[in-house]
Image 1 (cartoon, rainbow, N blue to C red):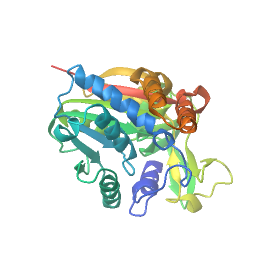
Image 2 (cartoon, rainbow, N blue to C red):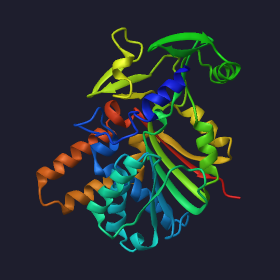
Image 3 (cartoon, rainbow, N blue to C red):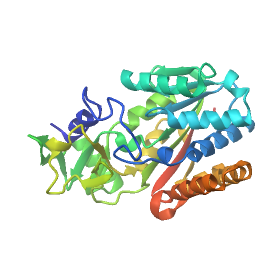
Length: 332
């Protein structure tokens, strides 16, 4: 079995890691920016409001999260939008792209508990088939969860009896490696089809996504397993694939050059690519924190929130390791 098929089964098979609800944060296998601080979603919402007020979106726009887990990010954005303009909850639509029924039900339960009847959450299983007027898409750490192939000096990884073996690469993989100067590392699968589906989803759309990686290849394997906040390199001699299969997260660094090229091929426009720290500051997270400080009655609570924001921005923690990519459908 080709490694990309094996990884797809690991993460998205009938018993795959992401086919059912998993805790994220202290009780789970890893942390994300969303689980770190609600200010992450607030900053993105502030940026969306700026785009709306500048005329890129109307008050009837759809706000759509992809890869939403329980829906925390979308919910954090909704709270900030409501605090600035409550009328938008009546005019806008709120959507999650979620293929798994168990997760859709978990998201519905969470939104009902948080918002009651004030918010109607819509679901679609895939981007394919969406035909809307205007959508603002948002995602956090989805592209590192696309299945990938493993390439090494003209060979592609396969898995036989839970053991990685190397076989001669196909022409498409060799051509990809030549294009990006790849000798050793991951080749993500599915970026092109994902971009094609988003391109057709609305008359106008924008997409803000965060992930860890770089806009170049490092010619080394970054693929790794996360289990109970421990990291296991896939090629560690002590890693037993059978033990970790579907019971842990499997991820790798995103090649943003590949991702940007996939969107360029569907005539999308790259508006920004920058570190998470730079993006969140530009979006207004410092101003949001200052507003919270003025309103907070508990100074200790403010200090806790400020410390969480530092985690999002600190170069050695999340600030520089994670990148933000802002894409838009090119206007005619």
